[in-house]
Length: 194
Ligand code: SF4
Image (cartoon, rainbow, N blue to C red; front, side, top):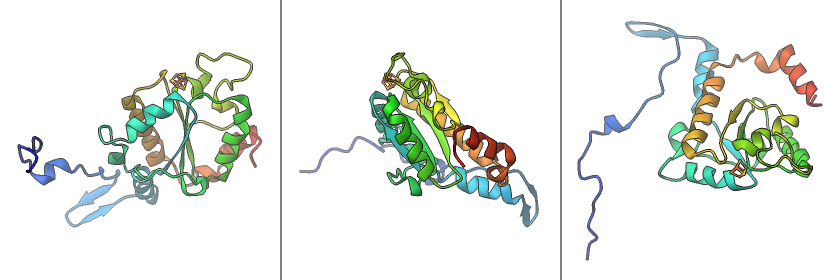
């Protein structure tokens, strides 16, 4: 006996379901389009971010929902979650980080290749959250530089997606020279990273 199918009753044209990444800024005319190398590489990078989930507690559950079919982070080119730091470019720290875990977060960050970005997801990763105690790190920015903070305890999947979109903005606009700049080296040195 066949099961009743109650979805996709109204057929939509396929093109309406496919959203294309917008073109970077550039000059166009009949038969040509010119832009900068920075913009093209930024476009490719921002739409193919590979996240590394470092989930220690409740916020990690929200991330699981974010990866699920309803919220579907894959829509933003980030479906390839990796658990090898060397293959990922976005460290997502989600959950309470005890001070003993601080060096582990840093070690994972160090194992990631440049360019790499970091999101602190939720109040605990951003600031220690409600755990203002002797054992909890009061924000992962004490051990690694953070690019985007997502507020909430826990943040809803929409907020996590918003954080990834903010990272996409940063990635898309980042200059290819930033990682070799003096300012970036000074930032890493302030964390004891050569
Ligand atoms: S921010 Fe709230 S939900 Fe997230 S790990 Fe901390 S206590 Fe849990």
